[in-house]
Length: 226
Image (tube, rainbow, N blue to C red):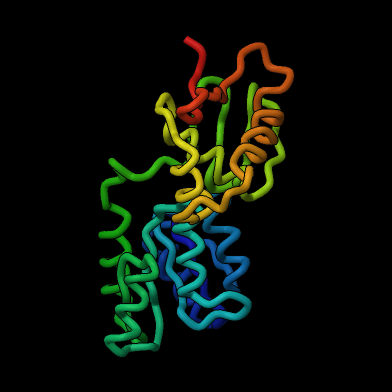
């Protein structure tokens, strides 16, 4: 089992890392929230993340919310001195999987960490979406086609993600306005058409087979060649 400890107190982090190592597991430590987020959503895969609520640079709640927004399903255990019911609820609603209050018994911590690590991952949201030779990594926020990197703006990334998740189905202009731009009305602009055109230029230009198709009078679809 590999555990990421995000704790700014040096003595506390050392105590946790040493205890986990003594039980035959691996532990990495981040001393602030921003470093912790980078490590939690980076290429290294962790079985469990232990997060303090009160962290410098990025607090624990925001950190876990950002993890979930990036597509990370790694179980997160809040380890904090904030013991009120409201604090516990905030932690769980932010995306935490468990909540343990300081001071704590190390045996209880390990029991909770082990239980989280044993949770089945079947049905978890994929972090890499693939259609044909197009690959989107939701954690690294990268897109490649045929192994070549494609540089997308944030809104273009959102648009392409929605098209990939709707692979083979027709998506209307109204659907894109609502899901990508959060517009529940028609702004009477060509915002969708403009972004589709830019996205198509980046994804399909120079390719033998296009992936993004316009269906006149209906909408758009993304599909791999047969």
